[in-house]
Structures are given as C-alpha cells and as structure tokens.
Length: 249
Image (tube, rainbow, N blue to C red):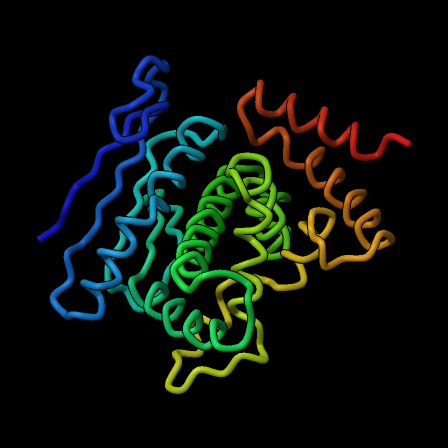
C-alpha cells in the first residue's frame, strides 16, 4: 500500500492555502512490509521532515515543474533528473537510528530521536539541492558534491529554524570515528561531507573559536551571494542582505 500525500505550492498540510499555486510537490510514502521499516515510517511521519522539505521546495526555490518525492525501501537514496524525483530510503532512517543509539552513549549532542530527525531532513534537503542544480546551466552542474553540500547548508540555515544545529547534528552523527556493528557502508559514505558542513556552519557554533567563526562567516557570505539566484526574489534579497551584514566591520 502507498500513502499519497499531495502538497500544493505554498501549502503545508493544507495550511497557508492563500499563497498562489505556482507549482506542486507530490510525496509518496510506501507502507513497508517489514517491521523495522514500518517503525522507520512511523517515526518519519511524526518528525515533520517531509513537510519541511516540501515547504522549502514549494515556497522558497526557483525549482521548475513538478517535484516528486518517494520514500520507500530502495537500496539507495538519490535524485533522478529524468523524472524530477527524489528517492529517500527507509534504509537511511534505520542507519540514523543505529548511529544515534551509538552516539547517545558517547555524548550529549542531542536526543536520539532529534538526531535521527535531523539526519533524515539533511538527507532530503541535500537531494533537493541536487534537484535545483540539475536545472542550472552545465557549468553549475559540474561543480560537484561539495557545491551540492554548500547549497543544502544554505537552505537549512536560511529557511529552517535551527538549521545550523540540524546540519551539525547530521555531521556529528556520521562522524567516521563512530562504528556501528553491521552498518551498511553506503549510508555512512553518502550522507554528507563533514568538512563542508562544518565550513558552512561553524560561524554559528559555540565549538569554534573566534578566528574560525570569522573565517566561516566570510565563507558563508560568499555562499549566500553565489546561491541567491536559485531562490525566489524576496528570499534571494534577504540572503544578499545577510551576506552584506556578515562582512561589515
């Protein structure tokens, strides 16, 4: 059985319906047969991660055409530009659950449930960044995974409350020093770039010293200027103003 959730542009669970209907995102969430994936599905639906992803795509970006998001037991997550489809796998959610349990025993980064939610939302926003880049000119598309990570971080920090924390939670959760017995190596290797997350967010981190935060703020301002054209005009202007303020003496 597949649960079809249709979101209209500017609407979130049928709320905020007054915004003009300029585009559409369709989310299909498969109801898996195995118990571990069913548990992942229930946790995912409670988290609000899909709603946040749709809100970003529909209200803030210049993404053209219909976007499809499929959540199922696919062996990998990814983006198919031919069909404009983001695939998110329950396998990633299960991986985040296992790693959150391991992290929770070693640190006070956050609750296990919060770490899981953050990691999956980061994964979704990362694939949305790939979708946006796929509609740009060939030169932009050739920038590679580092550029995708930077764009994902910009979307989180600018459009999601607590975005820096979300990105850093995902970063800490998939630290290479954390070993999880029986883990599928795919999820650890394809979650995100730890270095890119840190360089994009450390200006908001208490773990960074003053000099590092200054360097990161300059780096982030450059990212805002570079990626602003991929957002709706009002949002792009806010990003440019943020970039200007961050480099003012």
